[in-house]
Image: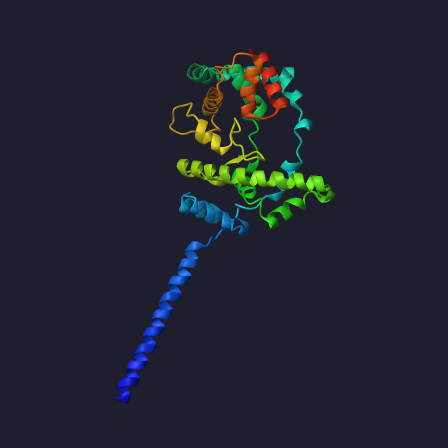
Length: 299
């Protein structure tokens, strides 16, 4: 009887160990799949949030496991320092610039006429926008968009903010400047996350390498400098190849025409009303006045 009892006791202990071992494996497996393995530690919670919000998990993991996808605080700091007032818009209205724009208009006349027929946006306005945005595709930006938007999306993290502030030096000491920067970072955090989701969806849909897409300090990309959310809403396949590629001139032209049409360009009659539509493209009166003046020269 004693032997039997000991055997049963040993069996119970063995079974308990197996149960504990099994639950331990399950627990750590759950941890493994619930936590992110982003190469950049600051993006770990961001990765989990994107997956929780319905962005394809495999895509998200493959993107953020890449060590080249990293925090870029200097880009955000530089953008915060930038002042619209000091930008030289007069360069787009020189005789040489107008000539380049006219040559572009002639070179892409077929695409421009097609866009005008479909959306009612004058070629002169489309070319003027492309000129001011990227010199008609000559300069579309040098910053990895995935890094810019990912950094913006975590700009509310105090440690990330500290890294951004380190590029300000003594400029950050004034209380009013601090308040302004904190407010700007909160806005960028919300916008960055929203645009990042659209960018990832666009990359996945078109099977694009995320690091191949480079753009502005705001995360705008392509010849027309669309934010990713604008690609989703207004992006057009201008050359009929089945892909919306904003680094393609025909697609860029059609997409700008679509955007302006969606914001009631044809219903706007007076110059002031037309300029209000242009402000929806870029909320800078300096920008709008330059686009309008260049378009007048291109008529």
